[in-house]
Length: 572
Image (cartoon, rainbow, N blue to C red; front, side, top):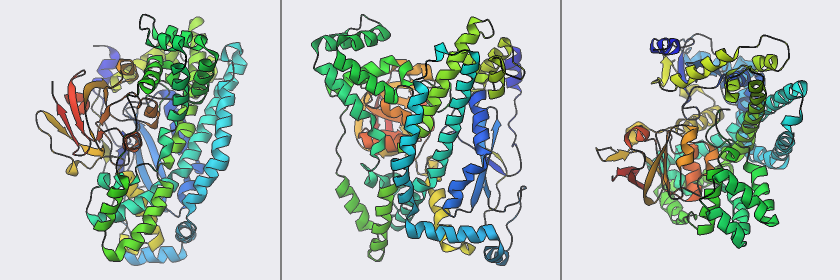
């Protein structure tokens, strides 16, 4: 047993502070790289991150974030709450605070204004008209820089410029989270109470409202059309005697229009992270097999959006709402439709694109350091802190040795093999709901209902048997195909057209994979997770929140995914 393995064997999981800490395994199933973790903590320590919560009058001030065993654990911090867990004050004190405490008075007023003005509509318009174009220009400028031509000083400056672009883009994403989660969570919470349907059943009504998830299809179809119209290009696409990188280069050289369409697609999506959010995850440019297979799938018509009768489903759901509540239901649904999918729409630009560009510049710096004998492998630089990267590139500070960075990479690999607790610490008593001002309570309950259903409710999961797995059916339909188990980025190379993706969780970056897939199954996730949103828009069956699909389904097995019943059958 190595020194690192011995250290991991005696690792203990302890709460990093008072109160209850929840692990974010929806977004980060693995231990974070040290560079990403440092940026992540810096972001959450920023006062700017609290602006979005305050704008909507939420009584949540911020999230404390700590890394334990390389994983992020979060603890919500209410406005004015003491650092140490304690019982909430008596009700009359709460009421008095909303009369006298300046910040609580502001939040009470702001929550009312947010609902009265439908603030989420303003935020979405600002995103489309101002923020998205600005961020897109910034990403294009960063990716057009020829990194190999830069000297160490210029490369060091480029690393920092990209890091600042990441932090600014992430800040905008978190600023806009309430604009999606509050109106959708508000409608969903009330609808489930009125009708007793599950969140997954109710969310089918919103199918077709999150078109940002299928945005890559527009440029991909233009590329497929260009290849389809040139016989030589088609032959190259189908020539499996060539390795995938050679096929891609030959495809670009086969026709000027094909080259133009390919470059347009890669300029927009090539540097976006696909396999996750961390800088160790892969971009589309690093997955040429996926790119070529996606083009072929569109040409062959394998993956076409399945039409479902959303209007009929919406009518059935509305009929279950008590007659006296239907006018309010209609108003809530209208706002949910206006807000739905906003997070998945902006995540591509606010997180996946800057994250991919951060990976690009760090790997370029890593290759330079390997050539000088300072690193063993380029990707080991991902396990350096930002300050250490500066020092390695000739700036001030102490540079770690290459052996130390290799040790950290191995430590992270071993951490990924550990069973990780979902919670650490002791729960804190929530404030009494009946003393909150109505608008504040509505905003908080909407947000928390949304966040809760990013993950699955195990109590309502379909029952599992020896040959079946129970989960949550979040996108209807029934599909039989070969299971491909994806536990890490390297597993993506095994995916072929028509396969069923079986993985722990997904990110919005997976939308470039969906033209290939017949269905999706995940260990984690609920009705509002990224898998559910994108699968509904693509019209492919999906079952999420199975708990252990990646452990129970053998890679390559024939399985049936029933997205209506929330069941996965293992055939062979």
